[in-house]
Image (cartoon, rainbow, N blue to C red; front, side, top):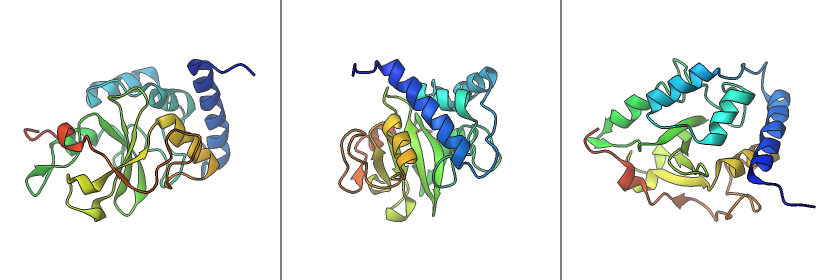
Length: 190
């Protein structure tokens, strides 16, 4: 069987995820985000969305599916992925910044834990913010949940999301792996 090109593999993943989301969402899926909404989100975020993440919002639905409390809609008064981002990167905990630039919160696990996509790299590293583990903004509050957005989405469909990274979707994680780049991504000036 010939190896799928990245675009073919990504197209296949988006199709499978759309089918899975339609069958697993608690209600009707939200419509996909319109191009103007995606452009507005990128203006507010200050960076392009990671390409696969942009496709999820623009082709599958504007949130409402997935593990935990589901993929956050781009804009929502309670927990919108983009509209709360500017306040997160400016806010302080104990006088220190705690949310890194270029990291978009996309899913709430409960208990204060959030999954976020690092939109500064091509693979879309998935990070988990776990405030119960240390002081906000400290290295022991941020962990690598998955080395790629694609692998993380696969784990949604196979039911292992939120667990150590499954084999076959990048490097297997043997428990919480601290995110080493945190200090360089916090903006002390806000």
